[in-house]
Image 1 (cartoon, helix red, strand yellow):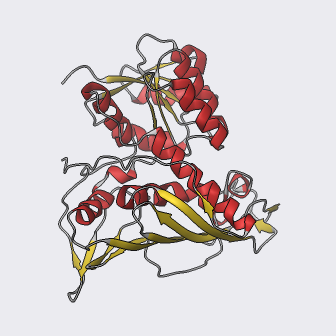
Image 2: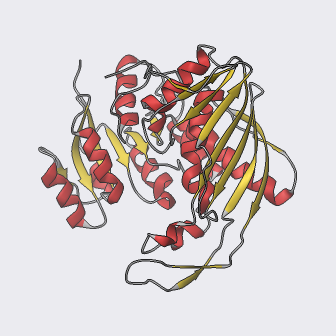
Length: 361
């Protein structure tokens, strides 16, 4: 094994803790620098990680000689801006979802990096865990025959119940589809391949929401996006996925993701996590839990960055790629466009189905 990929972290907010838990146990990546608008948060990270230093700004961090790749954990609105600064000086980038806020920003970012330039990776990397990968192996091994349909459901009564400052979930760029959809749609791309057409419908049952916790409990705020989105996705291979993403469901017993084929059905765990049981129901049989057969065991957020490091060293494509993230963004935005238009719409982008992940301890 060669030298680890040296990482500069931009953004030391809440999600950074989950990344640090993973990075600390990986041998192929090493955190060397961190910056945040709140200097105290950057200092706390540097104090936790031996050898990591605080950089004064993004511009100072990206030019450091001990930074090979930038881990972009900023808010979605500046994902493209931070990534471009890093790419401009030849540094690889791995960021939280979404890749960017718009298709245009995503296209500009990929064009700026170029085919032979620095690499761009993007969450979610939950698909690299044993949950989705064991299910994918079952699909690829023909355990359910030819896939013909899938279902994907994410339901909650809304994040304002627990989040003390929830307004951003209900402003442009938010809503259940753009907030949680990347986990589900990325899993579906791994399982069934890219999406070629969508038919969508959406609603906004409430004009206002009420904050349910924290010092601002009881305050009301305006809802600016659709909070219940449903539709049908047509995959390139012919399978049809029924999708529902909602902030308007108080309770449900719906499965997270199921895939149905000519010879059986699969039920998957929550794609917002890395593992969990994968259940198979063969035609004429009964539900049975499959043994773990693929994916990174005990994975956590940051596995996609580790895969990026391995891919750079091996000269192969990385799995949590900008191309997949760009396609998933396009699918979500086209679904919303379809809901407004009242008709089916083609998805203009596509991506290759990422390579499967062998069982890795």
